[in-house]
Length: 474
Image 1 (spheres, rainbow, N blue to C red):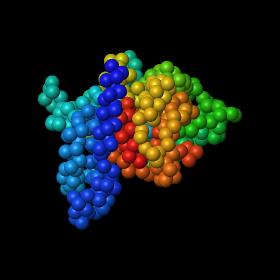
Image 2: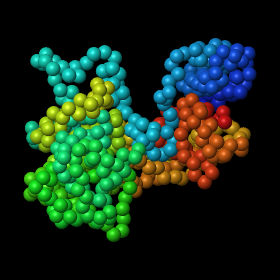
Image 3: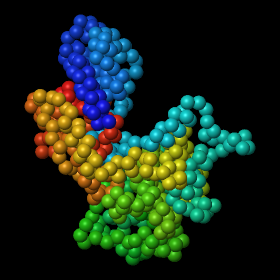
Image 4: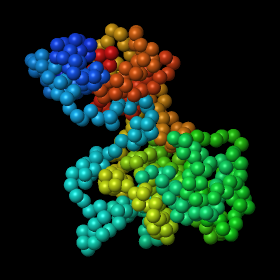
């Protein structure tokens, strides 16, 4: 079996060598003719995309030496077809080799195969988005995910709780505050007045929601007594915010959520937690501890919890609000709900994702596959790729690195991993990074000590052969 595999790899390497370089293709008469009619950048992109597609075909075993020679001879026609195609999309797949599992700039959580299948199924034709098939009357969008979400967060009293879905967690927080605390005080610890990325800050969200911010405690220490002293007759709720993208250590203090819940219950006001991450189960099996889950927040007495769908839940971008039914009903009646609602494709992806949890199949979600990869497996793949790259100008080493969970979650958590360390004889690390981003598909890594690092924890094994082919062209 090993001999057969080695033979196939050797055949693929021979076929890769038949592919001309980008510069050689640009010098052909066919491409010179295209350059007279189209912008150079458009032709260059088409050449790179065509060669990348051929490399993928080779990796999939679709070619022989004879068929490859025939294709190379007619390469100009393929390129001309791609140049003329109107589908030069700006939004493109990339290979995430940064080692950051939930990379916000790269779209956060990849979706499961079940979610992708359900999206395609629902997008292809009409669906019962707001239509009750039993009664033939109009229905609510949230029925498709509400019961699944309550099951996923282990709510037993499902008649007393509800859930709504909006377009992200910031929208969920703003909508909840506007619905429950407009023109009324909301008590927040000074240590939780965080910036959640993209210059969005909790105080500004509170201001836009119409709620009145009441700060308590200090940056590093806030006690239950601080919240209690701030209570007034018109206090609408207590807000707890997850410190998602930073951590404080040393002389710090923060009340337990259960203690805040007792205080809120005595005062007769809701406790609202912006939990943020959407985490459903413990991350301790993956070596990451002390991360709050949505289920734990509700079990400890939070009346309403907001979280993201595309972080540790592993689903599409959306904001989830789960809590006491009376609060959810007030939120659902807010006119802003229509402005923040999500479409059928988001519901399809979220429904499929939640099914993975309630059926005990969460390991099918890509983020948990990446969290669970053993460092020795990443090292094995790195070594195999490094041994197959044939480039006289590119030096490739295998080095230990630390991966990150990312996405505003588990700020202190790292995972031992392994990376390809690249140095190019003609490029600086920054120039090499730019060259990798110009490939098709683009490869995004990170720079460390004048080297380009490609952490394979966040790269699916299906890309390994393609990475070999792409790096061998540099």
